[in-house]
Amino acid sequence: MLSKNTVKFIKSLHQKKFRNQEQQFFVEGEKSVLEVLDSTFDVVLLLATDHFLTFNRALIAGKRIEVIPVTQKQLEGLGQYQSNDSALAVVRFKSNQEFEYPSGQLVIALDDVRDPGNLGTIIRIADWYGIRHLIFSDQTADFYNPKVIQASMGSFTRVNFFYADLKYLFKKWEVPVYGAFLDGVNIHQMSSPSPGVILMGNESQGISTDLEKSVTQKVTIPGFGAAESLNVAIATAILCDNFKRLLP
Amino acid sequence: MLSKNTVKFIKSLHQKKFRNQEQQFFVEGEKSVLEVLDSTFDVVLLLATDHFLTFNRALIAGKRIEVIPVTQKQLEGLGQYQSNDSALAVVRFKSNQEFEYPSGQLVIALDDVRDPGNLGTIIRIADWYGIRHLIFSDQTADFYNPKVIQASMGSFTRVNFFYADLKYLFKKWEVPVYGAFLDGVNIHQMSSPSPGVILMGNESQGISTDLEKSVTQKVTIPGFGAAESLNVAIATAILCDNFKRLLP
Image 1: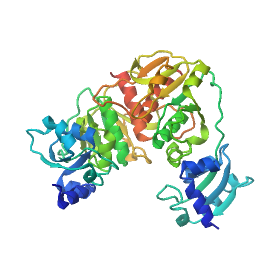
Image 2 (image 1 turned 120 degrees about the vertical axis):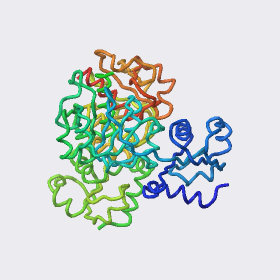
Image 3 (image 1 turned 180 degrees about the vertical axis):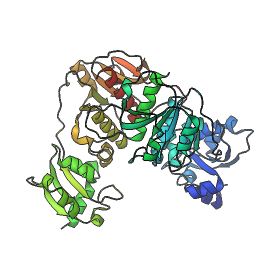
Image 4 (image 1 turned 60 degrees about the vertical axis):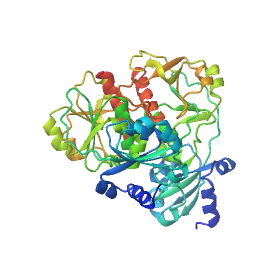
């Protein structure tokens, strides 16, 4: 049975402070819950309708998951979805573990991308292009924010990430850092770049002056009209597409 | 002075029904209001702070605009912005006028893209790539929805659009129609396409079966990972980028 304490606990996970304290976050909606159950993440609690539980028995069996059958009505108002007709999972954080530069691969680095929707969309884009490693400055949105999880559409289960001092890391890795600027090399005219890091800046400030010094090559998406800029997730997608065309 | 009736009128413009009845919509925030004042749109009413009015006198002078000085506090809660520290304009619709195919150019066509945020973002992308003509199926989101205007970041002032029977139009125009599908030609491997229409489908259904018959070339964004799809605005951006690379 769904207790008041469980409801209170899940609601507390809307806030970063409590997520960090518990080292847990929640995932909602059928698609995302199925993906997290099928991932290397550790699901500790599953609230789901009888229908969901019946159809996904195999995915739950044998795991140490507390399962609470709930009605659709009970699910509403727990997460952030206006309607959630199937399931919500409480999941353990992965530890913020530093990784080495994945040799020969592209990495996405975000310098203070603050909007959770943008971060989630960028994670989905990374997953589309098979970019499995992302690094974030400390001021980047929280990976475990429910809006990030929602916008990533399940892709959050398939990427490695960590929050780091990007400047320190770029120095340590010694790889090309391609920074998105408005005055760089036209990405359509680049030829055979080396693998490295695609660095995207904050929504309004762009890449910080301090980090700009670590950029080895400024790159630009050519504009043909009058719009002053592109949204950061859109720009990330276009750069990834061009790098994957040049470095398949 | 800001009357209760004016407040009521502006609030009514949040709803499509009243926008259509009045043939007017609203634009909010400094950047967008400045762009609409500087465009071919017809601004009928301007609510703005003294600061805004002082600094933008030249843009307002000589136009038949009813100007109501307001405080920041009065602006809050009128539009959809949580905070709007400068201005809100009420603007007349442009008539939904059919245009001919703009010879030699790219056109974006949307088949039932329902989310206003996606539509606004696509308008901004079109403007970035200098694509000045868009056509929308009747079930596509309303161009004058405040969320579309907001997401377009002023680019709504620089595009031509009309709502049409796309099937009928494609037949009439007799131009290549590039439809975004998951099983088309890899867009990285296309060479020298002819100018034509880039057709994007609905967020969950894609391009309708009926309209699929009008597609002369299916195109696909190559995926390298496990994400099943890309958001429609992201996909539009990537296709535009590739077409502009091939057809500069």
